[in-house]
Length: 228
Image 1 (cartoon, rainbow, N blue to C red):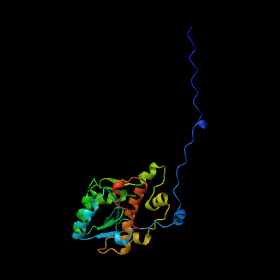
Image 2: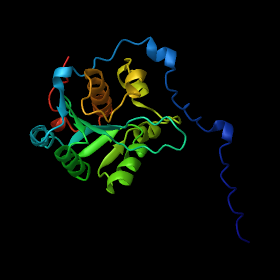
Image 3: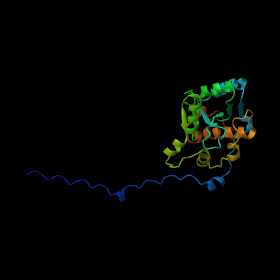
Image 4: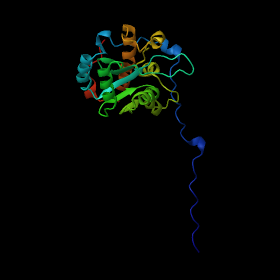
């Protein structure tokens, strides 16, 4: 007569399972506004790229880095069926400098497209789907080695889309100031104002700073301490 099989091992009840930690919640607009200010990149470290000479100089400086903050700006549209003619500027930033390319100038555009297509340059930013779509539609190229930092925050458990302002608050506990007035200015103008240069450059620079804070940028590509 064969022995009875051993009784099955009881499975732990759901009540005994370890509960999942709650998902992190981004700070509210009011909480961010109460934080100490995030020091921006000074104007002296922002380079306007709007000539063949400026493009040549920028090319040598930018290619010293493997990781760059990335963003674009386009002249706003105000009518329902109006199509954007942007991007009109491209911004790239290292840890201690930023370059604002004005894309109406031929040499600047040629270099900008070359850098966008360069897979050796990793470009980090926020909400880049629209930027990449406009680049494809206008010039027929696919930007290479692009990392949207929103995905890094989703891996940390955030469900909401995280933009640069919220990311700076999470990573540094500081308030990144963005001018709504500057965002709706004419980015196709031949001469950008100082306010436009600051706005455009700091969006790209802050993205790189966040990538550094998340440990995504290798130490050898820090490019020096960020200016105060």
